[in-house]
Length: 246
Ligand code: MF3
Ligand code: CO
Image: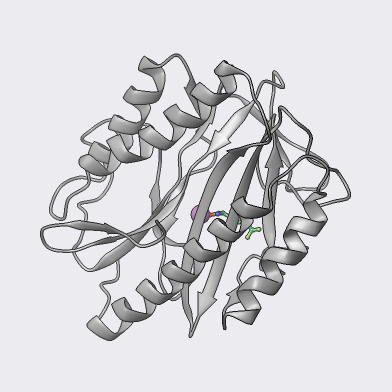
């Protein structure tokens, strides 16, 4: 884990704030009938207007600025002409680069009225992040975070996706270490101070098993049951953790 200088931390905070603002703007646009392409275009324009760069665009050939994942789509849904409809849940994942530094965050939103079970899935996914960061501390093993996320999710009857994980973040969107949302307390590296991580539980209502479609991106649940995603970029300091995208 490469440690950040005070000047780099300032830029990470700025990138995080821009990411947070873009997601808040995204939330304000959600309504039945809007297409995921329209959401992507509006969010992209918003990021650029505020001096940032949508970091997902062209990342390993990714064709859009955001990932928008409806219902059984776990992550990396590619914006299209598909329209949101009442009762859907929609995960929006946004990355912003500012002066070479990166913010990365995601939320799952309800579209109009949704079932109680889908609302519980959204809530447990978000809460698993907060359970996790209670156990994230400089000098401790990263596995304490990972295992507490897994325990919280499974205690609530849902499952954790394993094939995709969170990551270090800084002057690139993806840095060491991997940040799994499962595992043992004794797993992983010792967390270093003055570093940033993107922590991003992906939680399925049914099986944890996933499947990637032929477009090479769209990741869906094998049983086609819904999935939710919650991600923040966090800054680990000597004796506290700050959430940069909330
Ligand atoms: N938040 C995601 C991640 O951490 C999004 C990257 S997707 C891509 O991996 F489109 F940029 F590739
Ligand atoms: Co991420």
